[in-house]
Length: 193
Image (cartoon, rainbow, N blue to C red; front, side):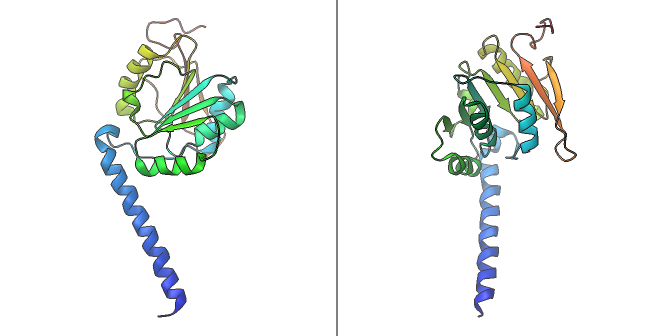
């Protein structure tokens, strides 16, 4: 068999194995994610969100369902903030671990964020399915302190009033980005800070 054909089969075989592992990782965490799949957030959306939510060194950004960690890396690089990401999809977690290896100030946890206390967060970032957003709103309202900000990519938190709703200057990544602030955005609160 020619060498080039062996190389082609090796590449195709590797791609197939990676796709199967990706599918298995989604199935393995389905009871927790309720079908939400790891999807990378567009860099232009991350830049737009970080423009709208300035942070100071010493603050903590927590990304729940951090995927490959790109929000964590961007916030750390831009603002020098401490960053913590939660991810339960093993493939996404491994990718995030590889991409953040050796970077100080970024902590990854292979853990379900629903069981974590988020009270220390100054900013929470998420890109979750609409099915869990009401429950997330209840968790964040009960744990975050006044002044904490929440960035939600694509889906609003039901009943909350966003301080701003943004769209990235991109035809491909133009889904809404919701920016909330505690307590002003909570149900029953005056929307003026």
